[in-house]
Every structure is written in C-alpha cells, then in structure tokens.
Image 1 (cartoon, rainbow, N blue to C red):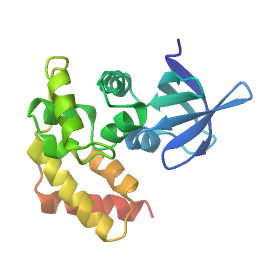
Image 2: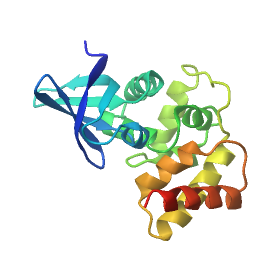
Image 3: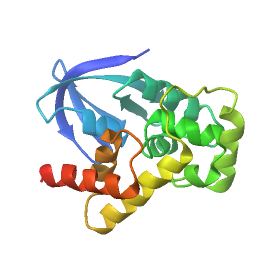
Length: 192
C-alpha cells in the first residue's frame, strides 16, 4: 500500500512527527534514529512507511531507511511484538547491531528495550535466528554494551536519552568507553 512519503516536516515530537503532503498533515511514529535524521521543521523529507490498520484506528510508522522499515516488519511478525514494541527495539541501536544481538542470543540486550521481557526476548531470538543475516560492519553485543554504558553516564549527567542515542549512532570504529564518551560529550556540547 504505502511505501514512501515525501513532504515537509510540520512538527517533531519525542516519538513521532508530522509530515505535510498537499495540505494534509500525517502523524507518523518513528524511532530515535529516524527522528534525528529528519530536517528541522519546514524542511523536506522522504521516509519509508508502514501503515497499520486496526478496527479503532490507523497508525503510521515511518523510517529513515528501507533497512529499518524491513526490520520493523520482521520484528512485528513475531508473536507478542506489536508495532510500539518493535519501535522500542529499533530505538536501542542501529539495525545491524540489533541483528547481531539476536544472532548472538543476547537476551540481556533485547530486554533493555521498553516492553520486552525475558520470554519475549527469547521468542524474538528463536523466531528470527533463521530469518536474518548479519550485514558487514555490525557491532558485536560487547560494543552495544559499551554504547549502553556511555549512554547511562551521559543521561546521568543530564543529557536527553534521545540526543545521546543520536550522537552514539555517529561514532564509528572500535573506540574504548573513554574515547566514545569524549566524542559524545564533544558532539553534545556543540549542539547546545
């Protein structure tokens, strides 16, 4: 049905945004990475989307990349994982890194997502092990742990979790906790 939308950003919120198309504003729920990739209000954007139709309402979910959209749809196919839970999983890290955690059977990593308990994490791992393949350059679960430690420190210092996650997505290479923390502080300081 819907696959992409192109229009101007009319508003941005913590978990969603409004995209205006031909005078009509559509509210779309989005993950942290997508929200940080969007231009400021008034800017033009193109997003990949998934429309969920229920008896009582329609919900639109939008993503910066087709990779995020496809992984959202895969997550949504797991019994007990709804669209908001799938979005919570996508908020944890980049798609390849989450796939790595699934392939490494890291229940502890998946339970960090909002709405995911141990049984649901185990079900995700069981159902998706054979459906996903790890792309080149994905982090191991250990590197995700380092990012999580840096995130906890920065949130403890008063930075917003969404801002911290956005900055951590830009860090490449296999830096130590200290190097990642320094880089993130520098980036967060330049955005204020």
